[in-house]
Length: 127
Length: 127
DNA sequence: AGATTGTATTCCTATATCGGAATATGTCAA
DNA sequence: TTGACATATTCCGATATAGGAATACAATCT
Image (cartoon, rainbow over all chains, first blue to last red; front, side, top):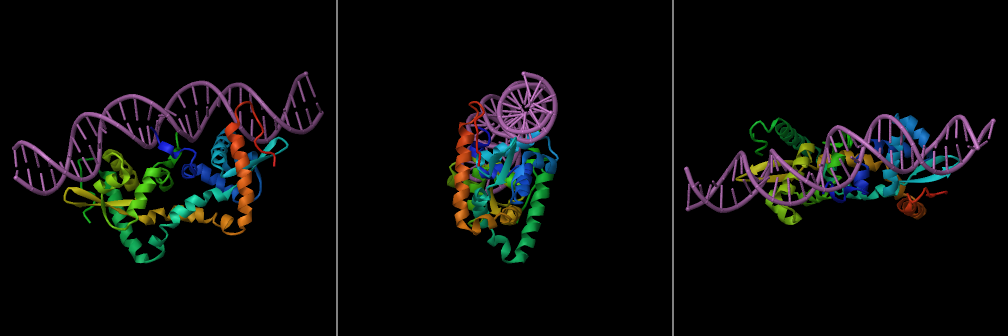
């Protein structure tokens, strides 16, 4: 099974950079026609419609009709679960800025080790 | 191209429920051996190792050795970008709780329309 | 009715990813 | 060294995308 129950999940919906972009545009607050989004994003219309479809399914956006256009609107409330989840880790960086430095170093070490690994089985961190 | 530059991206890393679970466990703050995670998660060891690999590549976790075990540690700072991003939408639900109700209704309507759609080309919202 | 515009859907293909099983690697103990 | 234990990696198959092109559908205009 690929990516488990990831689908139709808010976390998955925002995993796509372009979908986040769409959300950012819609954050303007008003109603946006698909055409506007297409222009703003510089993506082919079908692509935009497909991404909107995902966001729609998850409930992040809602649609309404006006003539032959579909007006999309942000339903930001659906993003709250994400906010609630990452909020739990806020404390890790709001306090003790110095600790971040140290952490960053370790991360850098690990990251480079990881990247250059697989040559043999190098060490990647020894604390 | 599937899921664009999603890979090796924090947003993608946390799109996986099990990876979020791992992060939650590691939030305990101390060092956790892979075996502990395997027990806590009830997943086969290779699966856990693979998820840890993703988190490692993104920098969300770091490893250190102790004997034959690998001790994983949370690098919560990597989650800050996510927090920063969703924080921009916080205002949508922190103020006017009533508005959420209204929004929820619209969402529900849209969602059910979406679900039952594709029979022909039904309407999905007319506002 | 026919043409035009706005948007959604379908078909196809390439690729990423997950899970599972098997195996490899590494480390420690006897 | 051989063996047990801890973890990582590889190989496999199934499936879910994402993008592109073409097309379908809907609404409006003539």
